Length: 318
Image 1: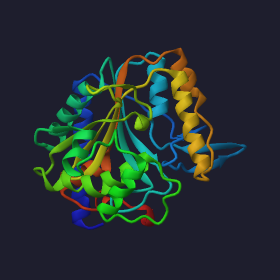
Image 2 (image 1 turned 180 degrees about the vertical axis):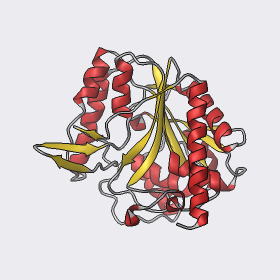
Image 3 (image 1 turned 45 degrees about the horizontal axis):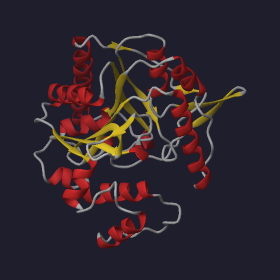
Image 4 (image 1 turned 180 degrees about the horizontal axis):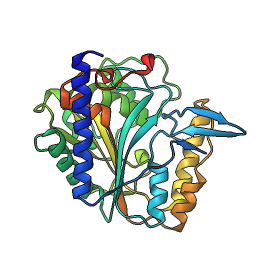
């Protein structure tokens, strides 16, 4: 191992220590939950690794979210976790199949309060400048000149053509898929070029159809939106936060919708996490939670451009 790699790993350890120090000062408890789970996420765009454990099939977690929420339902106070997570088809400059995640939950916080705490954490850990906040709609109107909530799917296809984005297959794509493509290819680069380096960009008020495990509400224009946010720094998606959905029945419905989408895409079906749904039925306290990529945070802090530069060994050398 060369000296540069040793120095990077020492600095990485310092970043993780500063995160733990931050939460200790906030009286947030560090917890551990199982990496091996009896079910996985239903999200069609997240693919879990599975393995056989004797007569049981288990999944390596894509995040610790479900187990941490179960702890909240059982009465634990504010919690955080730094752990490994796994996604089977993610590998590249910003992705590793095995990666390190920070996730935390704050009781009686909404997503706005959690954004403020996330900004404070980033200022503490990487000395980031003051954050900028935009709604999803504001960014589309600023950079692509249309309202993402009002536009039709056919008009979105026209937008792809106008922006010289060609796709091999469009038959199974939804309106949200088209919006995601336009956001990643035409807006995310602007979140790097148009702002001071390391400026956190908070994007809020996503369409309700992209709520996942977040509550929904009506915005000032009467449009149903998700009470969630994403954090970008230098054009890199760093974190995803929710004002957490508390209704177990609604969550089951969303999981079922995910499974229907999986059928449409010919993807493997996965069991719904009934442990989580049962816990929600018993009562999740009002809270907000967020997942943040430690490897990407380290890349940003150390001005590195490939995730393999800030970890001990990547997928091909492990």
